[in-house]
Amino acid sequence: MKFVKFAFLTIAVIAIVFSCKRDDDPVAFAELRDRGEQQIEDDAALVAFLSTHFYNYEDFDLVNPESPANDAVRVSFDTIAGVNADKTPLINQVEVRTTTFQDVEYKYYVLKVREGGGESYTSFDQVDLVYHGQLLDLETFDLRLTQIQIPLVSAAASTVRGFQLGLPEFKTAENIVEDENGFLQPRNGGIGAIFLPSGLGYFNLIEPGIPEYSPLIFSFNLFDVVYLDIEPDGLLSSMEDLDNDNDVSNDDTDGDGFPDFRDSDDDGDGTPTINEVELNVYTVNPGEMEPTYAANEIVKTRDTDSDGVTTISTVVLTDTDGDGIPDYLDAN
Ligand SMILES: [Ca+2]
Ligand SMILES: [Ca+2]
Ligand SMILES: [Ca+2]
Ligand SMILES: [Ca+2]
Image (cartoon, rainbow, N blue to C red; front, side, top):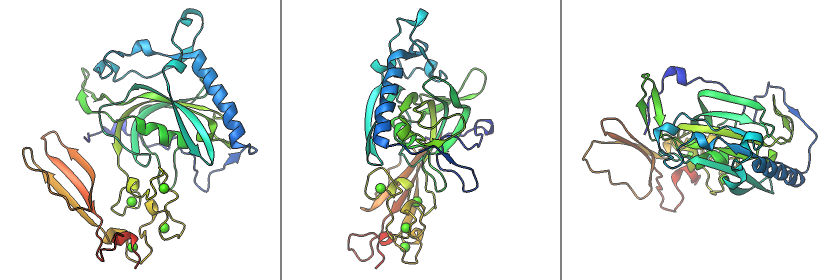
């Protein structure tokens, strides 16, 4: 479900979670360390943090996570000490995830306060959220209190790997409602945090406020998603991860150095991809039957408006010579 965003909520700023920089930006790197050794150190630091800190779980209605009372509550952290000595440590509440990145086995941690009742998305889409980025000493390196739209992977820049992996575990808001002050508020969006080793963060890259080899904490409230088609060629970026390894940077059908998700002619045969697929848009009124799709027709997006009218956008991967390779990937 798409909702209208007010202009004041859509402040377009480049967030610090982009790890790739423009060519004219100065980039500073610290001396390169061994990824495997750094990971051992980072995981120990993360476990120590999670064992000695708690989050504001008492501010949330965890009996009814979908309660509107949770919608505007942000996750925050504090040390287990003094009057907070009896709090439950994060280590008892997070979920452990593993992933292989740059040939190293990484662990990161996910705190799911609420999964969210809206749409799912992939590591290659654009999320709309508020977030707080902190170091393990709880120093803030980035804070977005108004909604910001961040492409997890785009042609020019990508978020850190841990962000790409962690965010899609949460869903967007289910819908939007007007609050008592007349402002539109997202309802039942994902709320949580991710705790990342430096190897899934900036590693040896030195960013403002982020020393090299810093584990990172991001806490966030999810609102909306845009399914990205970067070039655009009619195929969502998420459809261009041909080997299904959750990485679109290594799928380059014609081997020209431009991965398919930002190559407007994937097979390099001189005919743009968008001319080698068939794009359809269907409008389904309430009570009407869904269209019957072709065998090689893929639904890209489905939006239902407030009148119950659903707009479905699809792409047909035509295969003219019937050899099993769709035309856009078939240079012959
Ligand atoms: Ca595309
Ligand atoms: Ca891939
Ligand atoms: Ca290519
Ligand atoms: Ca082509």
